[in-house]
Amino acid sequence: MHHQTAYTSASRPTIVALCGSTRYWDALAEANLYETAASRIVLALGCNMKQLHPLWEDPARADRLKQQLDELHRRKIDLADEVLIVNPGSYTGDSTGNEIDYARSLGKPIRYPRYVFRGPARGPLASGPGMAVPPCRTDDLGGGATGPERRRWR
Image 1 (cartoon, rainbow, N blue to C red):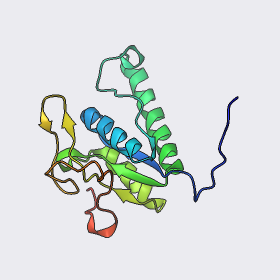
Image 2 (cartoon, helix red, strand yellow; image 1 turned 180 degrees about the vertical axis):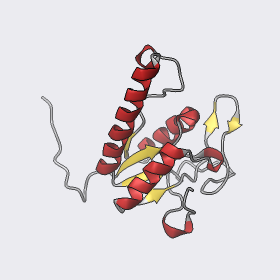
Image 3 (cartoon, rainbow, N blue to C red; image 1 turned 45 degrees about the vertical axis):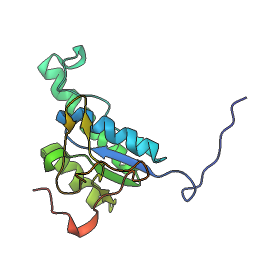
Image 4 (spheres, rainbow, N blue to C red; image 1 turned 30 degrees about the vertical axis):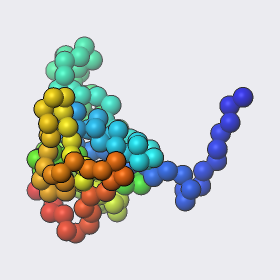
């Protein structure tokens, strides 16, 4: 028998939308892991168009898909309680900048990770504004700077 729990918005886990460049796919996966381990529902990027795939090998199809995915990601931001910006080395491209602007226009809280991203056998991928240099403790999942103390991305 399948049992469903009815959650109220006050009792359900926090929903967080991940935003960031797919050039840092490993860091996005790591953020997903940390946020999930912190009992948050994670709305993550579903495609990495920087990796070869038949779905976007045709340039015209890739352009249409990119627009479709951008719109889908805005809907994820709509659903989220907060937004986590994954930007190793403080890199923020145009798409991520547009997502930050969109989230701010909705009044969504914006966080930046405090944990250090690690890539396979590469050590820390990031340290910079909003990121801790020493590795985090297992009880220090999530967090980061929010609000006006963060510089606007542009």
